[in-house]
Length: 150
Image (cartoon, rainbow, N blue to C red):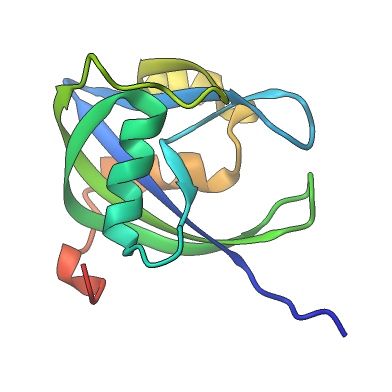
């Protein structure tokens, strides 16, 4: 019997001067170009916060400071039928690491304003990507200590 388990992922909503840090990448299952926050999978022996910082650096070259938790969500992706358990953090950009090597799966890194994101809403990796930006715009977030072991 197969054992079901969700894929544990993290993401960061990073806003600066009214623009959000987004990545453009090719969906491995559909082949389409999609937009998402910097995000990725939790690795063995890694905390959720460590994963969020690592993934953001690997996908964007930005070093960030986590400032809160926007939410925790389950999403079943129609492209592969996998279930993802996603923790989304709120972060502030600190500096762009000019020596960072961007993950080869990332096609481009963009700072997009809200209207640009809405215009690309049909190309979001999942509905969660837009939902967490909406939460941020409404000022809805939780303290980092919501996540134990950070």
